[in-house]
Image (cartoon, rainbow, N blue to C red; front, top):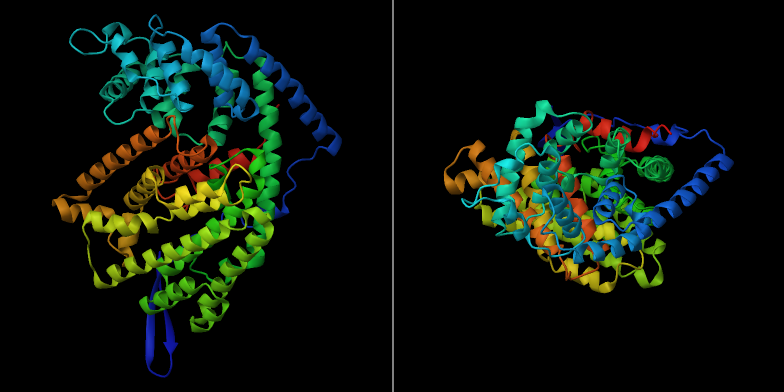
Length: 550
């Protein structure tokens, strides 16, 4: 809904503002007021002790399983249920064994599973292994058509393709077509798995949400391991308790900040922001990082709404100059309604610096630099919007890959990660390497595809959709299709960059991959962050509110 408001400046000048009225917070103070877990500290400790007992059993399984197929299935289940962070060393050792195995005699399911597991962990295994499933005409063997389990395994493996791996592109089309034709004949729980991954492939699902959804599927699987299932349920609930405490902390901070009250036009999305950040790293050791990243993320969201949804061009210019100066004295030049935001932005980053260890404090300067870069890009786009200027797609992306703020979010998520992040990592990410570029392309284009209609209604800058239409003389439908093809190319860039040898440690790269996955999830059907009262609300309930029944 669009709303107009009048602001009187002096005796004569009147500014007519247009702003979109977003729905209020779905959650309110829910995570502040709620008491989620009724068990005593003693019973909670018993859960933790049980988890440790079950972990030892799974470690023994990983070490003692000599059958390679059983080992691969075990690792796959552990990963699907979000338990792999407990067994990183054991899984690494098992994957070295799996890599050494000759898969020439493997069937479709085993070959595809091996390929996916190894590619997910950086092994540069060749896609040529799938050529053994083709006939002399280069088509996939007709004998595979009824192998639903193998086809699903092939389908999920195909999403780890890099550029030039035609066999995986063909495998994707073939497996998807065959699974759709077989779907009505399938039995449970395979039918549910096929439905789940045809909607969103395994490699592009948010880890915590997938674990929650997959648990009841695994429970119905006759080949399930009861130790792993029990561990998954207990571990999920223990981590959920941690997340609820973190969310309570950031919700209190957000209420005290009071920006959602003073800036009525801004999106009030602290819970949604935390959920998005949780998708980047779920592991308990990154608790500090999640809290810091959520704060930065929500300040960025408010800043976006100031530029995008309410301020005049002159006010945006003043805010841009103030952010570039990054000095408390610059507040005097700002309109009254922006002063509070500016001061709290500066204060929050000061608090970050105080919270970081002495050898980590340098990180805040990188975050300041990113806020400055994003503000400059926002203002450049604002000038385009006022002038009704539609740039070429290339010109647009030179600015909008920065205004996508993916680089800023990446900096924010590294900010509190601890010793795994070094000065070299910050130098690497700030050089805008291929991984960061690909992540930014995915974020920018998917955002534009889903937000284009809403933004054009409020005199927004031309999106990449409109730029493509101008460049190529196409309609909206064709433009969106072509931009989605560019997104898929960016995914292949990400798949390539995750393969060994990597420029930085794997935990650093995994965060960017997770960010890309979460961005695609948020923008898959609509802008779920902005319109968060539907599917996103349900997903937040699954991950952050409803415990798993033990």
